[in-house]
Image: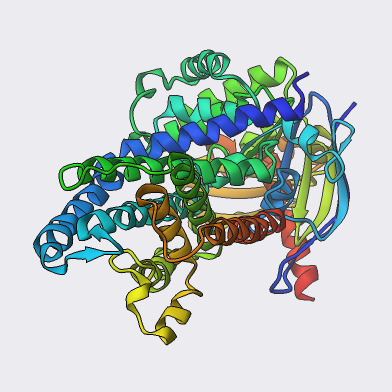
Length: 309
Length: 259
């Protein structure tokens, strides 16, 4: 079963800006799917159309087999959305925000109250349940939006940068929570600028740029196509000039730090052998950025060049 | 599985409860000030100046103006409720909460209208209670009084929603109340009978829709009107249908609320 099918989706805004140029996308039921792209690529527009907040200019969408245009209400019942910006009534308290949202999906007040309490506890918001939402921290507001999106128990949860501006501890706890609800069967579509988030959570990914899907597939498959990795080497003794390393490219040489590009197929032994021959002692080694980030930057950079050309 | 109709019934109740909670939470801003204004109107125009005015249309002046003052409070508060609530929801983007849900636009519209009606009637009732300090307020035709006040309140709630759909900033939600609603209300016969006006101004007053509301309400309470109150029902009903259709069209098109 497909959770989401998008065919030739287009959006041209009134000012002529073509935000989506006919994208096709499929998300399987139960998937944890990442929709990545630079700012202004069209991610939020696509999400807005799926959630009925933006009118499409062309194309069609199916949610669990229901056509969005013909069976909009059935589609809406299946979708929960966490938007990029805080969009609840900040003067209202979290408990009432959740009960009201449940009411919009036809859930009677008594049931909605029980569910609201359940999600407030699950997302560690119980202590703030009766305080005005404006008094909550940024992380709490994000978690409240997740609770609100889940209160009607949707089968498809769409998260538009849910961890933006959230500290690492809360981000990790949100990851754990999202992984758990995905395990329980909720299909999740995630957009994020933290690519390590996408790499560690998601099984499939689509990269959107300038309103077009430029890459789509399993995260593992895309990573296997990543041709180059950059490693950061911390040295025991500072070097004054970049060492000559045959077959490897030194990207940066700074005091006790060397950034070296290693292409797929090359082994690290040759690198270390050459460094040892030049009496350069390495004390630690790490990836400069995660692999998906590197792949993403190369892909988007390539697209930028094409557009500029 | 719950039917969409059942979902919309619960959603309607939810919007109404949310609206009532909203204006009750800030009752010092929403409920009390109109009562204070009405008290001042009745003291100054009704008692102090009114005693020198004498009778109007066969009634004591204070008795004549009380229905108009109640109606003015109903009109301004019904309008203010829906314009501020709907625009606030747009401004903070929490209108999206209901837009992503399977709620029909008729239900959204009806929910906000009833919210405005509830505030309008609550304020109207409070002003009526205040008026008891100045007049006996016997109601000649309770059914007509109730119908006119509810219909008028509905009409101005719809007006408030349309205003907020087009509003892009807080200035835009004060222009209509200040420059359209207030003059129409004051010139709608709150403080005088249009029979006092010269023929030309009487004719001009007849194109003011608020006149039909105030006169209809006054007929319900005092049993006297400047014209046949069938016109009041006709005019208010016509405007409800017209503005209601416009508001629904705008919501369906997503004007001001969708990108």
